[in-house]
Length: 383
Ligand SMILES: Cc1ncc(COP(=O)(O)O)c(C=O)c1O
Figure (spheres, helix red, strand yellow):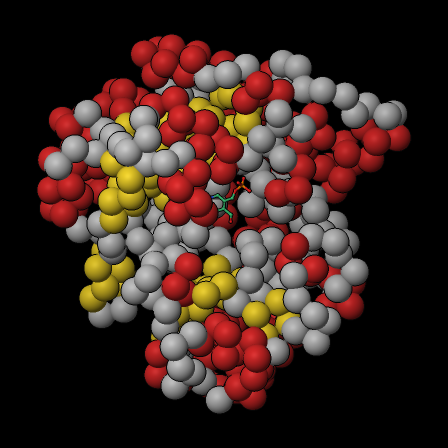
């Protein structure tokens, strides 16, 4: 199998994996939570890792200019975003990056804005840093989810220190438009809000959508924004522990000098070189993966329309997470638990993304179509 024709592993192979997705449930459960992909890692990444292991090149992380250079080149080619390699700082993972930024820019009790439903660890990071969560939820109309910018502005007026943005959005699978992001940047400047943009899913944006990096929006964005991102989602290497904190202008870059030096060297050497390799040599694999994922997001739509049309599902613009409205299935207070108990199929529970979305489950479709068919059969078994 070449990187131009990536295929999902069979289930039997995946069941031998040691990651959390494959260890969290008994062997009779089909696991479809956790954002990992059931696909082989890109060949150039495997090559660099094998080379490093074979040479026992497994020490601490010093300066690795390759990461900033590779990311800047990728960001320019993919998104037309002009990144200064020296403003790409390494960090263990996106979670640690956001937590360290919150520690630097906030005091306990400061107010931090999120837009729910949102990736459940946004809540973890907020709790860990003892800041106060303020939620301006997405509003839903005719199946699509919209950010109420008027409500964001009203919240900013009440004194928000940081806006934690998820672009592209997990679990809604939606990219923000340039206009939305410009409005957020302008409001943030007016009200003295720092925008932390989590862009981890961006490499997995599908062709019909345009991902806009927050910091590509010009002077206002660079004054108010910091981006945290990684190759870990796009190239499926989360276990290697390396992410990036990125600034654009001098002023913000100087503010980040106060981050503890350990933020850098707590990332992993293997992760850093896998990351640099992903951005410099991993495009063929990424594009092949996007062909697979694109097919799967449509396959799932057809499968559900045929087998369980009562499930609401909007095809995402990005990534491999399907946000399924199962409210019509009569699965009780906790549909995820019911599906696990009766159907032996595991999803992420809607209520972990917002207390108001317990009638949703999040399904990971970065797998084979056989597994998707099996998952839908198991949902049917639970009805
Ligand atoms: C939006 C978002 N941010 C961060 C992460 C986790 O990133 P990391 O493992 O680098 O902390 C995920 C994982 O799914 C995610 O969806």
